[in-house]
Structures are given as structure tokens and as C-alpha cells.
Length: 338
Image 1 (cartoon, one colour):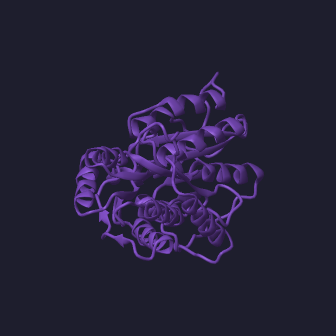
Image 2 (tube, rainbow, N blue to C red):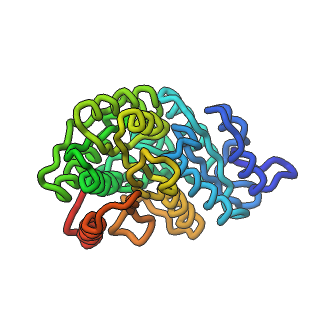
């Protein structure tokens, strides 16, 4: 993982690692000897993706940024990654990266305990966690990057309330992690800010970001309880919510990757959050020698990446106006979601 193979440039090795699949096998396949810099001085970055790189959600959004960063820093930084790692293997994957990387990045709050433990074991290696607890504290060698999922959920809640015909909305989360629980709370706050009379059902947590079948069951229960628009923070699981919406005549707010509104009638809109830009942020600062263990909160109060909301169909002009007002209040700091 640390040194380029003879006759293989860091750029070519990066592309090979991007193509590798199969959990920890992907990490092994991108391996090498355990030292941080390559022989030619190329920096090493290892990224842990717990979920699928094609989830059309948080992991895929991050992966798009991974690919951009690899292209931008070709010849300066060699990237390695591993995807679809079981919870029990997070620590093992992070240790493998830490023994041969200058910077290790982990995706998702579900990795928080493991990355903090491994960072403490490797004080000379830089670490960054994307999407952990919004109120978490960085350590001497661990930076925390907050994509402000709660802010995105606030916008999703507002949008849900504004397009709901039944006046009832709900939220489905992948796991009952602190960041997701806070997002559910802010979904409700956003819904009530947009429509004080809206009914917000008790949030549901599937227990797995990628289980589409369980997510569908949760969504069907919400639609059955009277909701007609759902917000969600799921990875592959959002496909189950879309199936439930189509079956029940309801809709959902997608994201963090937005698609053309004509793609699927089940989507009333999309929250856009560029998770991958945070990988680029870390890589840019590593390459420039300005990386530091800091807490960075992205979103509408940060130049980029920013959160945004796209409504589908033909919502009333008043709905768009209200969303613009709420976005402006968030950007100004008048509304806070953490």
C-alpha cells in the first residue's frame, strides 16, 4: 500500500485501486510495504468506504470526490480505498491503511469509534472522519468534517411540508446514530418552519443504511399512517423507500445526489450535498502542507460544498420562495442545525 510496484506509477496504481472491489480484498489488492511515502515522495491517502460505491447516496457522492481528487493530485498523491466493509472489520481496515498512509479518511458516523481508536494508536498519521457526530471534538491527529446532514434534513423537511397534500410527513434514517437522530430532529424543525400546522410522524430507524427491504417496510408504515412525503438518510436503502412511495402513491425527498426530476416520479425533490468535496478538501490541504486536525462544518455557511434543495414537478411559487427564505436564514446563521 505504501510503495509503487516496479514499473507502476502512482497514478496507474490509484486507478487500479479505484477499480478494485470486494471488501478487505480490495485493500489487500492495493497493498504494498508499510511506510507512508512512496520512493519518489508521493503522498499516500487511504479511504474507508463502509458501504457500496454505487449506492446512489452518501458513499457514491464521496466516491465521486475521491475520483476527482485522484485526478487533481495525480503524481503527487496516490489513493487507495476499500468498500463494503463489515462493522467488525472497520478497525482492521483502518490499521492497514494507517501502516502505509500519510492520511486516512473514514466515511460515516458508524466508523467514529474505530477511527478514534486507530488514530490514537498511530499519532504520526493524519486521520479525517467525514459525517461523524456534529458536536464531536477533533484530536491531535484526527480532523472531523461535518457535511451538515442535519442542515440538509432541515431543507428536506421544509420541502416535504411545502409539497405535502395530506399535511403529514415523516423521516426514515439508516441507523440511530447521533448525527442521524439530530438530522431527524432537524427534518421536523424544517417541516414546522415551512408549515407550522404540519404533522410530523415519529422518525423510524431501519438499523441498516443499505437494507432496501427493511427501509421499504418502514416507509410503508409511514405512508399507512397518513404521511405522503418522506425524508430519508439512507444509502442503498432509499431504493426501498422509492418502491414504497410508488406502491402507496406517496413520494420522497432524495439525495445527496440529485437526478433529473423526470427519472422517477416517486421523488418530490432532492437534497444535494457534495460529500466528495470533503475528500478533496483534505487532499488539497495535505498536498499544500496545510492540513490540520480541525473541525470543519460545511453546508450553507461554507463556500463549498454547499447543501441545496431541488423541487420536482410544479410546486407553487410560494413554496420556492419559502425555501429560498429558509436557505438565506441558514446561510446568515439565523437558523442553526447543530
